[in-house]
Image (tube, rainbow, N blue to C red; front, top):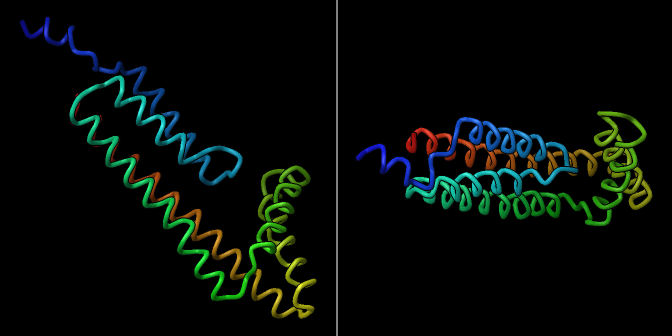
Length: 173
């Protein structure tokens, strides 16, 4: 009788399935650090696929927790650093210039070009705007700190969602 119930259960994601979900989550976590991958979305989607295939109460609770954690982290990701950058008088178009220069740098200098391009773009835009090297550099430092804070908050949300998934896998096994 227990075997029949286990066979009827929709869930019971195989070990191979768990490895694929874990790989998608890992790629998503890397994607948070590499802006060309949809990191947080990939983490959430992998957990959602797992919950849909597992179809247990624990899996749905894990998906709810992951959704809430990721949602809050994305909200904080945009509100907290923006508030700090506004206080430091860093304009949005300066960040946009840094982003464009970062994308160009990514293709010009492998691996570190994104960071180098972003910093150079923000500094040059601030230098044109402020016409003072010290103030331009101070604004650049604030912008880099704001972006690092933003990425850190998003990564923390992705990692907490991953922990929730691992707990869910343990509970459903």
